[in-house]
Image (cartoon, rainbow, N blue to C red):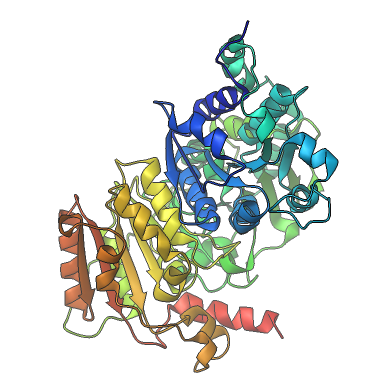
Length: 553
């Protein structure tokens, strides 16, 4: 007796349970039958993209808000288009699942010369490419498909890293036991774990400090442990900083939060806490060049305690084997140290804005954007002038922020911002991007208007790739980009007159007026073109560019 519960249904039930309500991607003949299972459901929505690269970026942005995302491509041509975006998700520790519709297992095993292959009988190339990148992979087979899906799902849930699943077309309609659905919740029960030995080692090391400081990274957000850090800092008066990689999903209005650290190029008021510390506690952090002022951090292994998802070490030496990241963080939350540190006396910087009729500078722009962000906003910054200028700004309570400073894929931020907006319609996304970056992924204006999204998008038009200019080739033609007419973009991509507002600004006062108008127009997609000088760059980018240029010598 047949039933109507198929392997595809089970896979989608797992995805739904993990928190994805929307699925991104591009149709192709090897995934069309699977897409039917998505579009025929009431509890999942298909969000078709202009191309697979954009789908992977959009899923990454969605996962940063929802904690998980899924996108679907076709075999070969589709997945290779997406592999850059999925690589960014593994670099920056973002939980995304890619599902690849593939030829039947019979076709693959026979090595048939079908389309989307190299015509060399080898169907394993693309899976090997993903494995080589360190992406957890599975090619489903009829005997073990349920276990394979479960293993992938548990891996993503536990590690918060991306994974890759190949779904051959012959398995899409394979009948499975409907009662499997009842056991999905059991896949995500965290095993009880004891980390007493490793915790005691860490606690003892911190107790030996005189002026500890905490620097947080991206894993704090992925594993949702900021409240633990806040509690630990609160009980013991320990200063807290974050890095650009990991900024923004924590509360920067917290009384012990000092600011965003970027090596020696940070403000002196921030640097002093790190310079004067005898014990730097790095939590969930990676010390990459983009967020340490080009490796100019003012501490070394011999005064650093590192606490990460995949391990911890004290001054270069690993802690006991019973270590588990979340256990340690929960234990620290309840810890009163033997130290008696004084309360922090942090002064709030004056963030008032006094616009004039002068032309907009990068410095004014960064302060203006930061001053108008509120707790209902997620600020997304494209790598380049936007990220380096905005990452150092302090955010108000409940505001969020992200960019992609480690992977740094140009064009990422626009689709990622839209994905983030789809993930939570109750927050309003504010994107700052350069016109050069936007041109790589501009096609998703179509999706934005089709889905009636209402973010605020600032496009900095400074005649080219400014971040590249300051590294090398200030006046070289390869750093120029075509001049587009952004005012025509919404209509060209299908917007109705009442769906959008386009504003072009060149002076400080025009920028402030545009921001105030955009904040009022909550029911519109607001596109603001910000005209700036070609050689105007944020101070932190100018300093980092020197470090980047030296690396390339």
